[in-house]
Length: 301
Image (tube, rainbow, N blue to C red; front, side, top):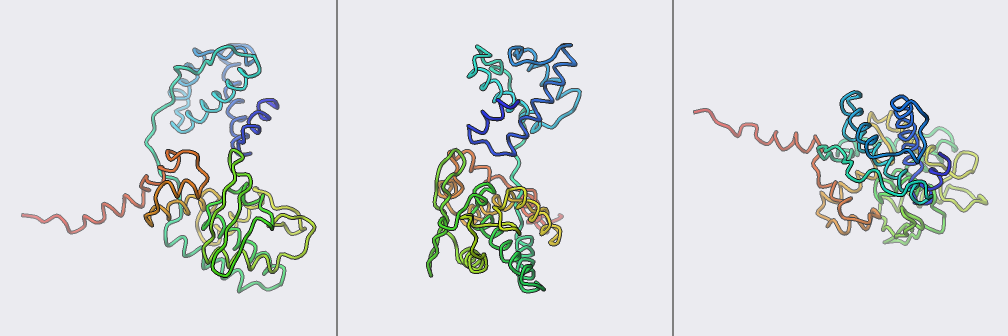
């Protein structure tokens, strides 16, 4: 497990992906031990076992297609690691297909939810009773605005240093030095994001650490810390709030504004347009709006 986890981190996989893949591997290991009557080892990974496992997930556990495909993806990565280590000579997942699933749109904030979130952030700043609370509210607003208006991944946000922010009176950008796959990119900031980040810089304080976002004790803010804070804010607004959802909202807004997929992909740090095309997939709210347009459109003879 440790060696596989190290391999995934070498490949630039996010912490959430690493922990998910390890959990999926443990699930397969338990199934293998119960089915084969012996402990699982990488040398024992076979195409027949993988097909049987896929069928078990389908017929016995009634797992969703997304769950099955994710677990097969984890085993595919595990097989790649095992081959690199010389533990497997062939890829046992060749010919083992995933389960077809209806393409679903990522979850993003609808217009009313975005407006409610912005109002809550303003209220948190203006209604802060102490200087410490006001400082935290200004920080939280800058965090949300960089996720919502620049589409950063939470790992990219937490890795930002003060020098990565370049602000001018009429322009500005954030430099992501190490995005997914180790690739750097510069993301322009709109006026709202520039103001929010500038406000935070003004109250951040002089700490020896170079990182832009800090916790209460001046330590570097972590992805889990950001997630907890967003969850608390989301509860106050009445929406499920996460870094992913804010990033998805950024992408969806760009697509709805008519921005080309090439530009959206560049802003998000996507290697392939296929990854970006999912934002063309209509949400359930989009579909509901579409059928509502038929109201009163059918007459009776």
